[in-house]
Image (tube, rainbow over all chains, first blue to last red):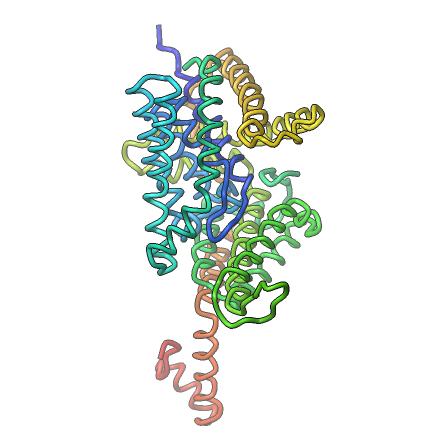
Length: 176
Length: 284
């Protein structure tokens, strides 16, 4: 008998791509980088789907944006956005979701490991985004950090707190 | 109509091969990165004409983008106030700089044009065509299961309007229970996101069952692309547009210099001579 096609993981991965895309629409632009709920869904994808499917989820999200659908922050899209001044944050989602998933799976699915995984993921996003922003705008390190990281730290703490609660509540629903 | 929806039509843009359309979006998006005010203005005129020719109401388009336009206005205001430079005017101790206003206007304009390009693309492209184009572009890439990615893209396009609708319903339900008066931001995120995720996961489960019941697999008929015959015209026009957007001042000065050289200094007969023997190149 032929093996059943693994539909459920595929559908859940696509669902997270859609959630990340919708999360990008809730944007508060301060300085050159807008605050969005998008990164919370990216890190949640790592926590709930695991590293491999989370990575696939972010890769498909970037591909959909690259193809021209308005799914990046503020309803933008295209290769110019992906390799533009804020492209480092978008490309940083790839290693971030991978590391979040690996930490969550290695340390076990509990709140403390979720917090650690989300913090690590957020740090990776900034580690990719801030130097990219610095180079794109020819800023000093101080200015790049002040414009591309400091204004969003409070929002990130709130998103991590909400994300850990949401991940704990959602896991029982997700049967991969 | 929402930002992701397709509007049926029979215009040249609707009939254009989706692969060429995707390449054009990439080209314009890249050109916008390097364009100044003149380039952005040219791009706006072209996009405005395309929106008009496609039959999309510009008022409706602005209505769809109203919140983004508010965000762009905020972005402009933040830039005007934070970028140091020559003071333009001030009130209550707040100084608005000329450089800040210039930078803010340029960044907001670029954002708006990228949004318009994306919206025009999604309004004139069937979701199935987009899926087919992604599959076609990924086919030569090794280690990428292009059929699986194509199925995921079609599922994403199925989920996007569903999530937007359910998000609006959850938000209305939260507001009806005075949830919007809650001062705790973590609780507000939780009250919005948790029910939304539960609803969407249940919808995803139903979709899985329906697909399973129909023996859905990735072994499906390969996509067939329909071409309108105007693809190369659009591609060349897009290339010219990008060049004009990136080098408007340079191109203008070159053309003016060349014309002056031909008509003012040399007699007109020399123009024919120079064209024949390529005496003066446009890229002097």
